[in-house]
Amino acid sequence: MKKKILSTLLIFSCGLASFAGGYLNTKFPLPGESIADHKAQINTIGYVFSYAARNVRGCNNFKVTDTKVTAELQNASYKNGRLITGNWSEEWVVDACGINVNVPVDFKINKSHTEFYLK
Image (cartoon, rainbow, N blue to C red; front, top):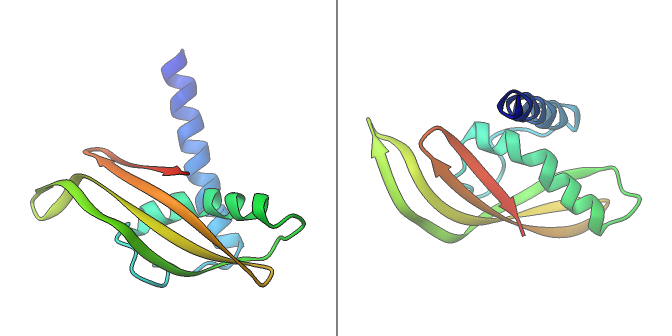
């Protein structure tokens, strides 16, 4: 039962993040130097905008203006030329109603999926 609920929540959150990216007119891939793939960027964007919203109260207009890698890829392994494990950190700059919010994001790829953590 717990697995089914967790799976449902994961699918819902991924769909919600994809919807949020499209709804907020975000274009992918994001500008800058992010090494996160298209899917990881889409899954992360809603959480990044939520982080920015907590820092700029009352704002509902967000746009990623830059991304940069702050900690290089480590523990990387590849299969058929595709990255299947590894971790790195990035900083995404969000324009929130004219105020730049720097959002630190840690990524971890674990064979079947990419995880991300906001600090």
